[in-house]
Image (tube, rainbow, N blue to C red; front, side, top):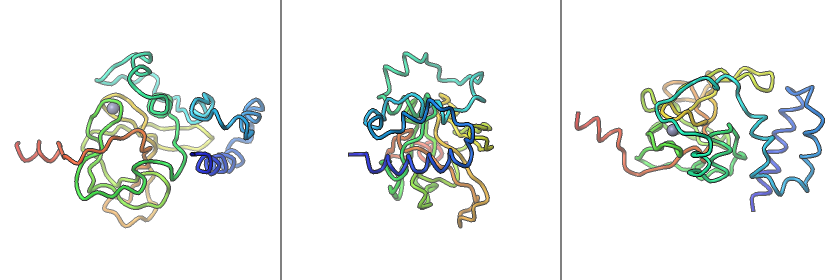
Length: 200
Ligand SMILES: [Zn+2]
């Protein structure tokens, strides 16, 4: 089951909340009791805690209503892509995935976001990419938790992917780490980006 990974997540969450959420609302605390963790995939407050307020007014080419998204996506995809949730570290299907070729598309709208060549081993617990398919990913400032981070979303549908961090010293061409939820992605061994380029 996923409980051990989630415990780790809760520890991370505690660490985070102890340093950045000094005024954590009291009603959240009972929900972190082990008895409540069994209902983790549908706990709405997690989505709310990781949410960003900067994106509400953005519009994207691929528009769907929340109920349409809910019908299309499974509950975990909906929580992460549409409610800006975060999957537990080390739990994702693509965390340690290191194919030679192929492309990672948006799990919401199938837009190509990252190529296999752009993926690198960050050992952070989530898939990491040093660059994107050109224009595929849009950045927003995320000021939740009293920090200033850069949220990344799919430029086509606005689906939440994760965050991007710069200057961490990884030996990549950009020194950027796109820290992406596996659940926001779908891997395809075909590479439509490359095929398009070679036909052009
Ligand atoms: Zn998308």
